Length: 163
Image (cartoon, rainbow, N blue to C red; front, side):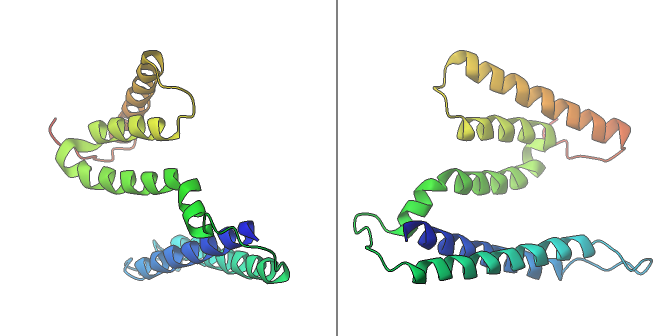
């Protein structure tokens, strides 16, 4: 019963996030050159996610109403769900901060900081100096490679920020 309640909460959350995503695709300008333009693929992905969230909601609801067991009064399904998914919420917040920091500190520095903090969020082992150094080295190396590839090979201008 607890699992089915968590699935219902997850399905409703995914449904609302996907609905907002699909509304956002309505503001993508349509190209007059081709039938497939910038909004086509995001709308396809959003539609698939919407259908999958509805399928999860139906499946979880059926499982929930099939089992009429006892309810754990200590913790509700919602609080358990938030505890289990704390890293996801931290990641969403970090992505928002990352996006808004591009203009101020630039792509390279923002990406290095984003990757480093993301590594810390999803790290399950004890944090020591060696692990912090490896996270920093990986963040710097990956960000630099992506920056060089996009700027020098693909000729995509990226925000330089304070550099």
